[in-house]
Image 1 (cartoon, rainbow, N blue to C red):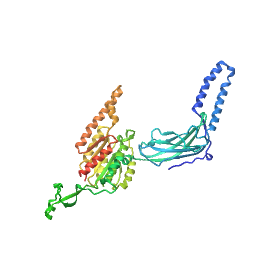
Image 2: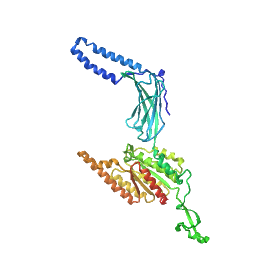
Image 3: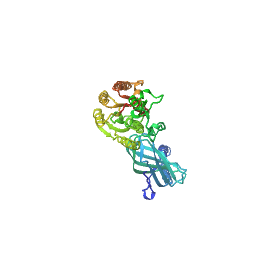
Image 4: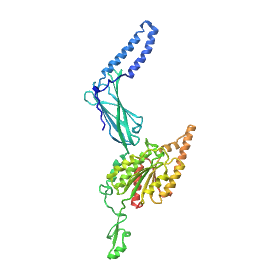
Length: 453
């Protein structure tokens, strides 16, 4: 946690600046001076004297505003994309706590929020001359974000002037992927099931992997009878199978231009990462192995397979390294590289989107080669903005052009997704806040069907 202690003894003098109220009063003196000059030219000295008196009052008001005694700021070292965080500022001013509260502003880079600044009031803490407050930031991109400036201003008792203090900051916040879906009560309640508990239970009676033989009892499925073993023992024996584990799950991310477009304020890639980490946590709880793969015009990240939830932080760190690339993805190179690195049949979950027929055609061709050896799930997000533009009533020629373009993109999606389904690819098309749960459902269905290994 970063901390700054600024004592007035070691600081230069804090300037006094006229407030907006003082500037308005000075502006009102101009027509007053014109009236005096027109009606009583000999009394022209009144207007300048009034202006000087106002400036003198502003200086006195600034002096009465009080000295800055201390200034602290507290910055959390980590944050999650799309989740609000608070920057706390505490100041000590030699003034009455009942006076107008000071105002603080924090400047930061675009990664930490829109607008580049957060302004907020500091409230009295109850101690003499002590004020504190919090500024809210909502990071919009992963990676390191910097705070570069802190401004503080407080008014005098008459409101004619303000004192200002500027402090350069050198604080950094590392923005991680959003794990709020993993911490959600819905998922945590689901994971309390014995199959996904702290110690995963071996489940007999499901799956196709042989576990043991047991004596046949009435009520058992007759298809489980092992006739060869029964003949050897001259008694009926049934096979007990175990649910399949140790499957390889690869979450592949298209980090290209289309995935950098925002959906409800955040890039598609960040929405995809949150959903993937949510499903990855469930897969690790289920005894499977998980890896992340990111690509754009060339492969970016390929992690080793993680086998335990205690190593989940490795997936989070790798997901934080996925870059935003404003270039078209190379599906042929990326998926060929992924196939070459996989030594056994795996479940590949591909998060992607497409914006033109050429890229869509290349993606379909690459997916066709991938489905020959692996099970594939394709995840794309419903574009609410595209649907809105398609159904918008046009008023101008520009609106008509936008509606036609949006309708063309929508038709392309309607052509590509059925082609993927015909290849045997499971396609998930849903809102960004629903793709994680849809993905978990399909993963569990696939796992129960023993279709991965």
